[in-house]
Image 1 (cartoon, rainbow, N blue to C red):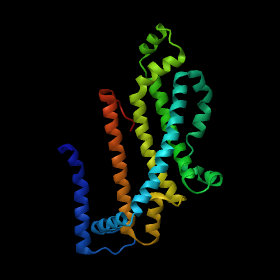
Image 2 (image 1 turned 135 degrees about the vertical axis):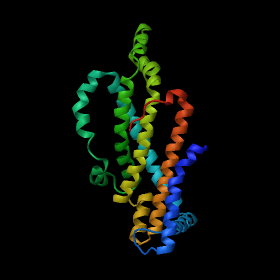
Image 3 (image 1 turned 90 degrees about the horizontal axis):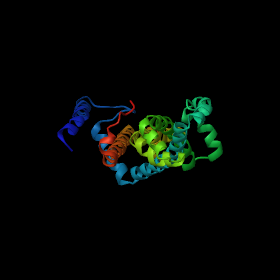
Image 4 (image 1 turned 180 degrees about the horizontal axis):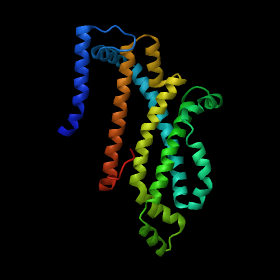
Length: 254
């Protein structure tokens, strides 16, 4: 880790130090906040009794399974819509009518159909991850250099060969950016479902700590969730750089 990367930790470290000094000098008596030292002790407690590991595993299972299913289907549909404009025009109204529906709005329907547990969470996460892959992979396919398509036609490649040998390899760096975006969405939606209705994972652990009037434990889980998110994004950024090199320097959505 270089010096530039370490600079990002200066503000969080300074904030924690200021909060700790404030807590020790003024004292904190609250059901919603806690001193950083108390949060650290609660974190150690959660690690020691295994509750943190179990909650993290439950959340990651649902998030990754939903991400895999939603991303695979979204990628396939996005490529189809990007390659065949007639199919895109036929499906435009359907896509634009369903896409704005919040994934958590499907919770009552999914609960009736699937019940509590992993299946409920995976289905909601998959629905949420489907859309960024569809929209961004469709855009990535359409952004493929037209001369490459002309070359594939000159080589008399079939439509399937054109997609497999020309379109997908050329669009893959941008598609991976879409996958990174969907990975963050998967983690957010998984925890949201757990907070709202599903009794497992980090979201349920946060709610349980809040109901037990343990702000230190609740905030420890929140901090850990941020650490998991940073680790996930850092791993994907590293994989992107290793897999695509300079091609990974495509413009990312903001």
